[in-house]
Image (cartoon, rainbow, N blue to C red):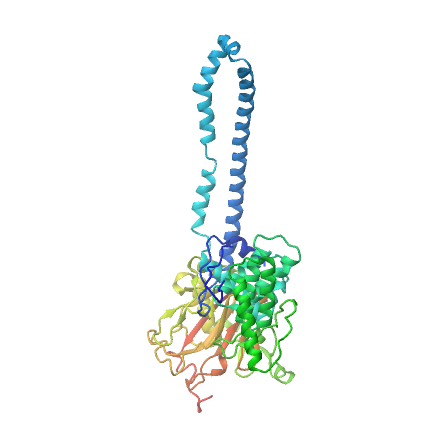
Length: 558
């Protein structure tokens, strides 16, 4: 916690989704001094498949722990047996040592006990039943999440909280849309969430989570963290949010609990003097102290960030602001699509549905079978790595803080299924895939997202696809390989469309006009996954080779 007077190093101390995160990524280290930088990016780099493996790993470790406890109990029982037997013997021998030793058998047994049996007891005590458990821990620890993953998990919960306007109490009690199994956050879990935000100078979320920890603490829940520590973080975070009266009220509560607190007194005087100075400059009288009314989700305004359409994007993710009018809906049709009499589609044409009229976005039903989806996932899982984007200046693939998912790239030659999928995309679109990028498979776990972006390169990014030598991305073909219980929609902020994942279907749109100019309306985003797991595969089709398949129009925007 930062004091006005001094700098404090914070003391040591996120559905199935919420509690699993907290169970797996326990905090082992001391938190570091606060840094006044912006949130660095911590991606939640564990897709649900790997998270499932961790669940079974934890179960195995619990069984190993039980076996260790049983071994310790057996050892302790044996030691107790020795102690009871020797207690009886020593009471008899010490009552009259000379009489006891006068019997030759007692003399012999004393020599034997001290020479042999006590050595056996020493060996028993020195046995370490923990070896098996420690060995098991060592084997599995290499697959454990690290500190970055823990921060990413906390960041994922805060991202969901912001996007879907969920208060901390809903999260704490596990009350999430589409979730049938509740998982709760304890006082200490909420405190750790707040501390993670605080240590990154994210005072907005620090306030929300410290307030929730305080609310549960006041309700009588058990906790390890002290109320003084919670108030310490909360009061300073509230001050950073510009709420001096409430910061004063919270600091007074802190002083009442711990009058000897090393910073509370100094902070209180500073807050009071600062408020008095501000009121004097405004020619206002001294205000009454703030009430102890709990801080709610809308008490403070969330700070603006780098994304100009943040509110529109997140609103669409919540289903707000979708511009699907009855007039527009009347212009949308469904049809059978045979790919301009493509031989492979004549007997079994694709079912095509309009999702949007302008720009034209279509959805194809039964684009992938369940067996194809499982095979693609099987091929991709061993290769899943942090998803990348092309650097617009260099054209090199790199990670970015606005894309949180795991991805893998699959070539057609690797398996007949991939070759078949590539051919199907070519048959449906009428565009060649010979110059397209490899089939990219992406897995978005809890909180996984891809913020608003363009698939094509703009004029100020001339080298984005230079190394490929295939021109710009003319079109996007996106396969949905899973249903998502809540969240995970594909949204288009410019014209207010929201397209929801449906397993086995695919959506298609053009990123470029026939002239080669970019269609800036196609800026889109993948909303954070709130509940469930989202699998997609996409094919980015490029300009080269499409000259006769999609010839130029007569105007720039044809």
